[in-house]
Length: 226
Length: 386
Image 1 (cartoon, rainbow over the protein chains, first blue to last red):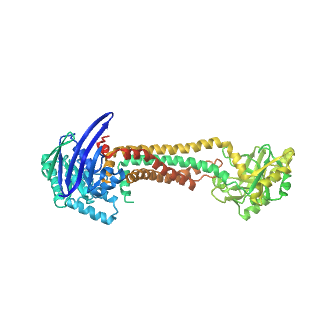
Image 2: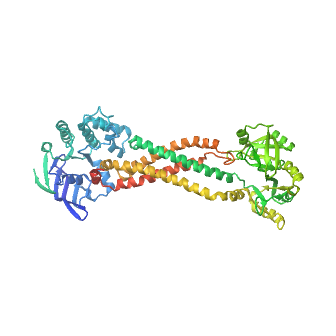
Image 3: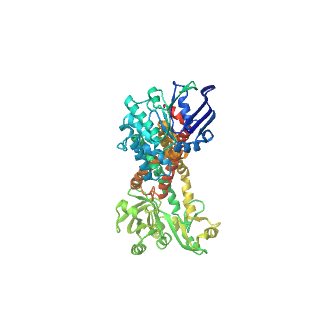
């Protein structure tokens, strides 16, 4: 499998007052194109931090992260924002939809940053919502949707720009078992049918089973490579 | 433009809060607009003063009269056009609360020098012929429901006695800024009775108004006029009508300055109202801003959303305020005695200043929440639980 993400000697230290908290300790990972990787570990192990660094929403203390041969740790804020908009799709534990926007408008948000015209945006949003099975809920507001449906809207928002990589932070953490299964099936489908590279942080071993590889972190160290 | 829908939806996320903020802005705009209108109306009295006219008055003080005999001498000065004169009559119409300017004038020349008071040729001719006639402004006629042919009785104070004038003309102000509250009558008619009763006071006028042939020669002509009467018992001071009005208004400068300052204090209050709303909104949306940044919204695009929302709320409040300002100013115009503000109207300039001030305030009010949103890292934003 051709590597799409290469993490080399990655360290992350947070400073609180005069104390230094080492969150990630010399991490090295390679993620193949089209891979479905699960990151597991107890709370505070650094898995979300690692995910954030790979997604370019946080900066490492040292080390490199290359995505498709480009070292994103050298980017400034503005370049990183542009890079994220075209390369990364995000799925959060608590969906993080904008409550005053409809499902359609939430999914359209990333497309507002592109040069697509209104008609093209409509076409993309409708396709994305149909993929997640919400073609009939486009004009619904988040509060009119169930948790599972909200997460599906969030997934549609993550894939609407056709990014290289989808990162998901505990995507089933706030859902009941049935909804969680639906979401995992959807992510699996995106990986297998649409060839998306997925990195998912999870506590749930059932969720991790859907991944093609699972990495465990403990106190900032990569402890095994199953 | 594609972000406008988000800005609009964000602005009305908390409808009550936004409506209250807009109401606050609207009320502040009304207060700001009213104060500015008062200042504009005050200034209008100076602005309508012509640069083509000179006022020649007693050098010691405006309250001392000048001999009627000066008229011919002033007319002989090179550069001088028509010369007219007026005397402050004052008096009491009905009672002391019904005040408006009452002047004894030269009917032959007055309306030539003051073309902004427009009289029909028929009214003008009748007025000139009847020595006890008068001309009043349209606003006075409307206020007291006076028609042509009516008699106006004035109880004299500077010129004691009962004075009855037949209304033979009602002049129309040429434009909005022209005073429509004046009353003028024959100086000769007044002077004749003064001659009988107070011979020492006869033959004096209050001041001369000199129409210039060339306004660029105002300084030179003024000097020539004043030189004519140097070392006489009644030396003169001649200046343009505008300079004369400015000097007169200077007496009220402290009040005007206070009102000016107050109007900008109100702008500050608007800013606090909007800033408070924007700070609350931005704080509540800390997580959302992180989501937008995560999706790829740049600092510029995020700024557009936050500033846009602040400006939109301010603008809508301003629109409501300005729309309400028109009837409010109209109501004040009706209720304020005409003698206080002969002209009182909402100037376009006041509306433009209000809109610009509120737009600037909208931008300024968004700076603090914007800086906070931009400074907060995505990760910290997601952790925020305020």
